[in-house]
Image (cartoon, rainbow, N blue to C red; front, side, top):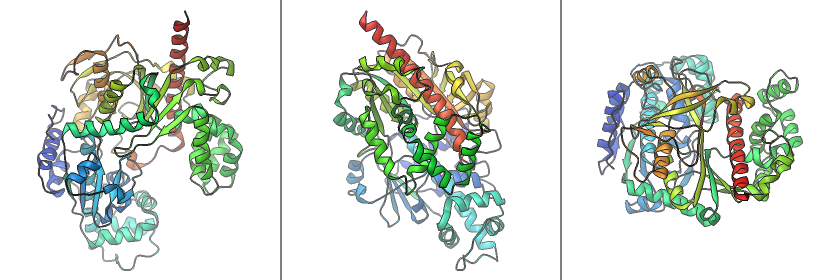
Length: 570
């Protein structure tokens, strides 16, 4: 379980990490309250009011979205890498418990309906994510507990017709913050407020096994499942993409465009007034966006409706017909995989922005290459996954990474293209030739800007950053803060060099024999007085940067594949 804590730009973050791991060495449950003081002392940019009596609504919402809805009934959180690890420690068949989900994290989580939550972890990055989230949630829960019990107008037994005005008064917060809490809690608002008023939060957490070998074993279980369903990965050249599970298939399958009419009918008749307004603005050319992006955005909402839910299975069947096979995770961490055969893609169904004409895409029928697209993992899980894939796949032709990041010099929706990565995990500074430039993304981006030649910082966790760290890095020219690029580049180093990645060095990856492309779209602006994804969502404008980046990645892959096929025929 031991790890070497890197020398951080902030001693407070360093102390926090050391405290977490020293406590989790215990073979018994650890009280989260033991971490509250050091958590507050870290002065996290996501929890800037941890020490204040005032409720930090953004931090509470951020944590709430990363925990399952049953968390209000949970007392103990147990962390383990696999079912075998849980079984060895007396938690038999946890996957038979009720599986619960979060809105903003993909992590297999099971609830025994008796106060215990089993959480599967893929790397130490998961620990460095889960523990601060639990701590922030507990701190803010207990603030709310105090507010409710001090307000003479609050009666836990008489909670009816709760509106933003009442909640704002009880918690001494703005109407906007109160409205956001009610939106997240929904119909459970009264029950949750009653639970908070009746008891203080006092989480206990236990790490069953922190050994590196268990993380590797969990990664092997994940990969074995993929190879079982897609053995062709062993002898076919592969373009590796780390992105999401929707943009790449949407651009390649053409399903949304082929089903345009039922999607439009849903938009025009649904109760979502914002969606309808956006659609009208697009039709009237008030919003300078693409029809394709809007249909991709609306497709997900349509499939979540009663009239559109049948289209989800239709989409998957359609994808299989055109060489796009989804492999869900089993028995391990939650990272869905898609294996895409380029020679099975239908040129007439591809997004029109990928090729000037259908004829230009005909060369794909001669290809034997695959795209392996994974739902981007968290932190060091990226290193474990890419190392495991490189061990088994015969030839990797390119590594392309698209992910969320915080920006210190841009706005939400911008796309950042780095060529220098400072990795807080390895303490290495990676120099590499990014396959992308602003010219590759800009033609497809409407709402944001493209910032290339950037320097990115790979942090240990979302809570594990503060104003001091950002100030130091900003002075050094780092403006792009994210969590996966450093671990991926550590794996790439080992794929191209005859030794393990170094520590605390400048590592030059120029001259690697395959493509390296990294695109980050801005989802947070941490210098904007604590505003983060807990303070809102990216909505439709967020789709713009996602699809601009995905288009750039696919166009690059197709370009590289055309060149490769020409070389093979000479």
